[in-house]
Amino acid sequence: MGSFIEEIAEQPAVAERLLARRDGTARKIAARIREVAPHGFVIAARGSSDHAALYAKYLFGVRNRAIVALAAPSLFTHYGSAPSFAGHCVIGISQSGASPDVIAVVEEANRQGALSIAITNQPESRLAKAAQLLLPLEAGEEWSVPASKTYTASLLALAIISQELDSDPGFGSALARVPEAVSRVLDSKSQLAPLVTPLTGPRAIVLGRGYNLATAEEIALKLMETSYLLARAWSVADFEHGPIALVEPGLPMMVVSGGGPVGGGLESIRHRLDSAGCRVLELRDDIGAVDRSISSLNLNSGLPEALTPITLAVAGQLLAHAVAVARGIDPDRPRTLNKVTRTW
Image (cartoon, rainbow, N blue to C red; front, side, top):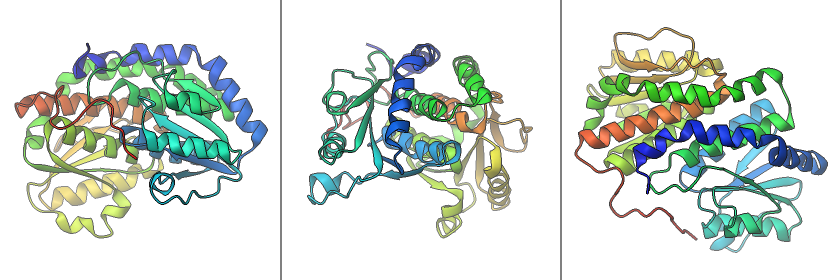
């Protein structure tokens, strides 16, 4: 059975396996999507997979000019009022493929005659069998309760589908570099040490935007489930519309940035928080220089912004593990949590 830190280390190999099989399954999925020509996508997911769905909202929106909606599964399981899927492709994302509410959305899509796709690590699961098309994550068994390799594999699977839908040589080349980029993140583990101590207190805020809003959400979740930190993620834009009133000296504020068009706004909020006396931390993956006045790590992977959620998520996993150890908590045995969560 693998531990959280061991499964974090498996991610370069998982990415290589997934990329090696992209020309077959992903290409067929993209061809079917083009044939159906949906107006947009509806994605059903929970937990970490829901953050992958949030990533898809930006990925398909920017690269494929598609509208992405995140499903509200309780409409299907509790309210009995399923919305119309006319003109949409429905994607269910679940690492275990066992979440009944995600399955219910996909089954309803089938009843309505919509195209349904499953992205899961369990090709024999109920979700996989319910969907018309399946993209297995190729991650191998994941024993640790906090998801690591299945989360980044979900991001990569979505990026592969996006590329197959609208091929771009530059993006295709960047996809091929993902395993190596993740390996370099693993090698940077010791550089995360300055970010650990500020996160050993009871609370923290994580900010992101664009593609890496999903990463901010995922890092906050990892800090909560491994270290019992009260961590909350916000889009920088939403944060400035009210929650910024929480700011006070010494409050740990982590900014997650992959550069790109939103990079300037993230830098601006970072300076504003620093001026307010917050303990500003930064995880970056872009070509900019690191500000030595704050606790910061720039991965500088060379990947386009659209793929930095993969490298930054891995850095966030390593950070969450280190914070848990510093707080004297076993990240492999989070209290009250099980590996498979079944919600209705």
